[in-house]
Structures are given as structure tokens and as C-alpha cells.
Image 1 (cartoon, chains in turn red, cyan):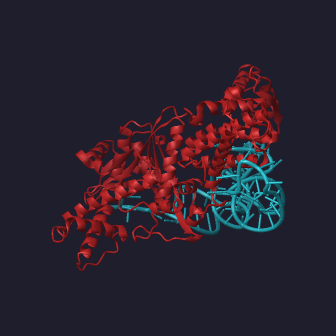
Image 2 (cartoon, rainbow, N blue to C red):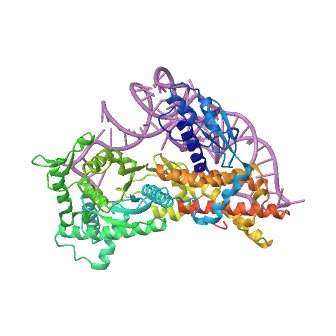
Image 3 (cartoon, protein in one colour):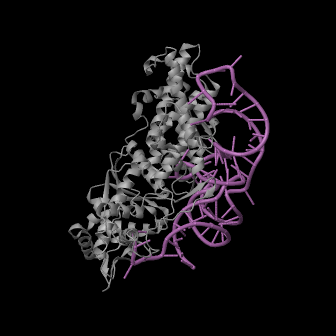
Length: 556
RNA sequence: GCGCCCAUAGCUCAGCUGGAUAGAGCGUUGGACUACGAAUCCAAAGGCCCCAGGUUCGAUUCCUGGUGGGCGCGCCA
């Protein structure tokens, strides 16, 4: 509906300019929004004021609005009236009987309702989670996982083609540290008198891995070359931990198209070759000891090391190669979802994108703030190194997938989030997941009732929707019609929380309607029309919940 | 010290990229089940949108400077 109005208004403005009724160099961007106050119409636009300011006050905005409104094509019978209000707003009133026609789309499209083609099939690479395989995923990773997963769904629904990838940082010091940690636990379990270093991973899962090795291979590593053993243990531990990570993500409803190993970047000297190529373009230089990337050429505050004095490449070096690799797989756009504590890393990453000859805008970075875990309002201490943390698995087991996911989506990603375990599993009004799911279950219950009473669910053409005249009903239909724009906006801004807020508002409208009016009554025509509306609501709730990866129960 | 993010009701947060009288949930107070599910609804109270300037028809939103908080500033990842 909004789109329709937009073209209508756009044509009117163009006509006015061509006929020289309004002085303007070009047709401005037509903005249409939904006013908060119903008295200001169903939609409103500020074009007249925009045009007035461009024309340098030669013509008052209200006058411009008048001219435009007179030139709106009368061939379209959607508009009841156009009012000019305030400093020059144009308020559009849609004919009451037009709204119900919007339900045709819902009926015809079913579970595809809300989807669009605005992404035009653009190929997007989406990287998220990417946690080191040095320990199980904890609650901090969980938010990034859900945000990434839902962004993927939203983009898919908006007509993009999305490829989800988990980047495994399986090289470097941290990994070595992991192997060493397992070795120390191993020796400890075999009765050796060793002191477990503080710098090593303290979590119990390390001991479990060591036990596993002992039960399978005994003490054969006790007296052989330690460096070699660490290498073997590192590989073993990383593989096992990654397996656990994949299982946990699966249980959380997060699925990747690919897990990309950092190790693969070093095959065939890939990283070295890339750096050599960049050296030719002068973005890489060697000061005799270390190799630097000239990120300052693109606004970073200092140049960054890519090859250490020791000859080892840095994490950044691999990351450059990784991003180049992504572009090599012909994606149109890259999206990285990062923990907000990595924000300082953005300038150098963007610099490297530019140095590689790609558009700065082709890489988008979504920052996800870390989560403070609470239990009954009291903070739960967390530290990966010390092994004190609540794992993702524990959260899923305790509060459930639906509540956990929904809780992570209730705020903008870049805003701090308190996650209270007790609150999240409480089945009460304090917990918004159930509010939305309850609406869904309630409608299902109505359907069961209708079925018992012998109602058949009508198709769009068989139902007389002129029975839907209550303001609540019109409002519900209007909100239903907003789903496509909400999804599109969420896709454009990469903000999944918009969908959550929409769902809450929508469920509220339904609950209110439900409490005031009966769907099923003695009036058969009215009942059928309302039943049809209820089914449309069910479709929208179901579609939106599916995108969020939250289940839509029929009973609860 | 420098950089990034944040500051909106008692609390937790939205505010659609600059729009009209700033919203929601929780909490508080008072009401609604012999009607399709009360995990629901209705009503009330609650505000210097941190402060001071600036940009313009118009600012919670953009700019500058403060104040208060979070994070980052490794040849860690």
C-alpha cells in the first residue's frame, strides 16, 4: 500500500514539475511515513516542505502541497481524500473498503507473505560467531549467533542470496595454548607432579579431553617430544571442541553453510603470495625486521604489522587473505558480525578492503554488544580463561531455545543487554516470547473451535470482508500490510530487533481485539469474515516467528 | 592522553535515517473470566529526551563544546 502511494505521489510531483507548476530541478526522494496520530491520515508525506526549502521560499509549502494534490492521478480509486495540514504535510486517507483487499496477498502467498525481491538476488557473504575452538560457546557468543542467523533469514526473505560462514581461528598462540593446556592436564592425570600454568585454559572441559586421550591411548605421550605432543593434542582438542560447538549451534537453531578453517589460507603459501602482491602496490612494506600494512593510507591511526619479527604472520594477515578469499568467491557484499569489543579493528579492516581494490561499502560490519548474564538480578561472573562461564548449551537447557533467542532479539544489537536466566525461563507476563506465542496459540484454538462448529476456512474470493468494519479490524489489517516494509527496513539496516518490536505490537493489537470482540458468533457472515482475518493474523505471526527462528506453537 | 559507542518514564529499552501532542514492557494504583485459552485485556499516574550553543520551516535525531558511563588503543585473537 505504501509503495502504491509512493508511485502515485511521485508521478504527481513529476507532472507538476514538468508542467512548471512547481520550480524544481529534480524530483526529490519521496518520503512517506505513517503518522502517529490517526487524525493525520493513514499516510503522510513531507514532499511539499522539501520542495519549498529547495525553491528558496518562493512558494509556501502549503501552496505546493495543494498543487501536488490536485495533480494526483484520479484514476486510482484508493484515496478517499488528501488533506494539507500543519506547515505543509500532505495527509492521505485511504478508502475504508480498500484495506481488506490487502488480505488477498496474505491468502495467496501464505508462508511467503512478507517476502520481497528488493535484494534482487544479490549475493551476500555473512560471517558470524567465528569463535576460537578453544572452549565451548558461552552466552556471549550466543547473541552474535542469533543476530547473525536472523539477519541471514531477514535478508533471504528480502530477496538476497545469503551464504553463512563460520571462520575457525585454528592457528596461532591461542591454539598452541590449548594443546599445552591439555598436555598439562594429561600429565597431571597420569600422576606427574606438574604445576598447571595460570596462562592455560582452566575449564573442566580440558580435563575431560585429557581423560579421553588417556582412555584411548594411555600414557604413550608421557615421555616423547613435547612440542610434537602439543601439536597432536592441539589438533585433537580443536576438532573435539569444534564438534561440540557445531552441536550447540544446531540445538540453538543456528546453521552454517560452511565452516572455514584459517589453516586453509596458508595452504600453497596463500597468505605469503597475497602479501607479495600487495607489496607491489606499495600497501605493504618491509622495514628490515617486520612487514607492515600501510593502513594509514586509508585513515587508520597507525600502520599494522602483518609479519612479525619472528617471521610469523599476524591474525590480521590471515584476515586480509580471508576477506580476499571471500571476494574471490564472487560475493557482491560482505557482512561481518563482530563483538563490539573489536570495534577498534574496523579501520584496518576497511583499509584492507580498499587496498584490495574493493568498494568500502561492500563490507558492512555489525557490532554486537556483549551480554551481562544475571540470575535474579545478580551478575554471574564469567571468564573464559578461568573456566568460569555459563555455556550456550546450559542456557538452552535451562531457559529453552525460543526464550533465549527472543531475548537476544529484543534490543538493538549494539546496545548492552542484560540476560537474566530466571526472568528468561519464567512463564509470565514478564517474558515477551510467550506474549507473541500465546497470540498464535490462541488463534489456533479459535480454529479448532471453528472446525468443531462446522466452519470451513473460506478462500479470499468466497468471503465477504465488508463485515470487517471495526477500527480494531482495520488496524489489524494495516499492521498486516506493514510486514513487507518492516522486513525490508530490517534488511536494509541489518536490524533484526525491528521484527521483534513489530511482532510485539501486532500481538498486542490482536490480544486487545480478542478481548473485546468474539470471532465466532451467531452471525455467520461476520464470523466467516473474522475467521478469515484471524487466519491472516496467524499467517503473519507464523511467518515472522519462523524468520526469528522461534517456534509458533498451536497449544501451550 | 587519543579514538569509537551510549545517555529518553522509578527500571529495561523503542523511536522507522530531520516531522505534527515523545512510545512500549516491567514495576505502582484501580478494574475485567457462567462468552472462542486471564501466559490476556481496560484505565490511571509517571518526562528539562544529560547540559550549553549551532544548522532550518521543524532537532530526541545532524554539527561543535562540555558532563557522566562502556569499550578500544599488542609484533593477542
